[in-house]
Length: 126
Image 1 (cartoon, rainbow, N blue to C red):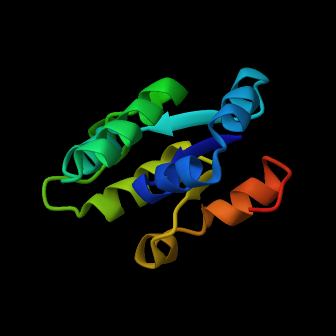
Image 2 (cartoon, rainbow, N blue to C red):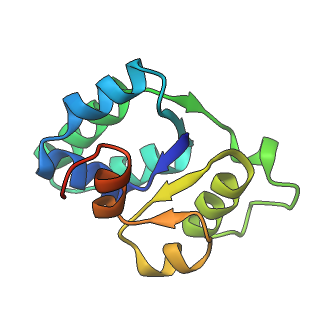
């Protein structure tokens, strides 16, 4: 399963203490992460240094296949919102977009909450 985590999903991973579970799921080949520069840009704009560093560290440790949005979105992305870019990249490259953002979730049928992801993929209650 190819999965993209929205920035708030990385927060949820840290809060739930699921990094090791997700890393094991990736190592087992059950999940492949897809990332874009959008997530890293969003994290870099977080003002709280400790939170910013924790999220950047998690993003880097979990890794994934980094996709340049301009290579998978046929339209000009210059004026697209970050949410639109994430939704369109997810639609082109992923099976699931994990997000707690209602507007982003409404933009794609691939969206799932972190709780749903944890239940369905990590096989635990979130």
